[in-house]
Image (tube, rainbow, N blue to C red; front, top):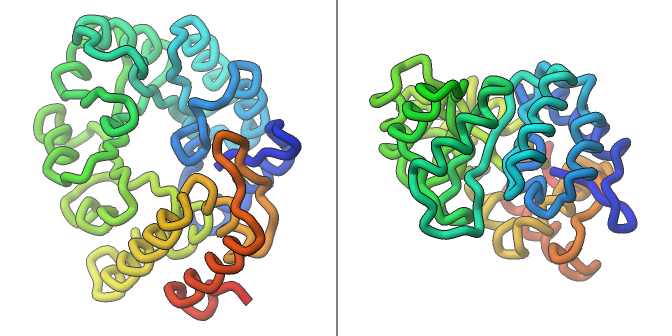
Length: 281
């Protein structure tokens, strides 16, 4: 989650939030994705974010996809230079009905810079990346090693494993599907709720095969539903303050912060969902 102050990225707040997440139970931070409002950031702001996370590079994934191929490649090169473990790439959203050949060339070019986790989010981008596109991009010099699959069908996620092999990394996108994804043999998840309940998110991985794992998944799903009620892009920032007790900065318009009254109501509702140790005081 990207933190803003006065309409600008605050690199110190951003870095501190990442450190708290990594100390609090998650394995990697995923920078400039949907929860991080990545598509709203300028090219210069995205470079600020990469530099801010350089000390955590080996535990970071940098989303570099954009509508400008040259900028995506330059950002990928910067992430590589700063030691990021992977980059991630969204399709060139906005333009409908691009041919698969165009997508292949785009992904091959960006991923050739550094090992890449594709970011498949059809609801947001209008494109559903297929295993065939991954295979063709790699045949043209790309280095796509995995996918974050933000769809509502675990079998869709599994199809990447079936088509591309067990070593191909597949990460679940939607918060409510983390448990079934893990128990189906997928490699992990990238979840927005990890920003405010990283300990529950981390514990779910350790307990996925147990009865406790089912309870943890229920908590995560309920928390995400509360956030969605208030507009998850805005609520995520408020939930970090309410649940974890520190200020991660705010969103930036056109994503507006919650009002004081909305935040009080959000705090009341999230209190009914989270275990006592994670509930707001």
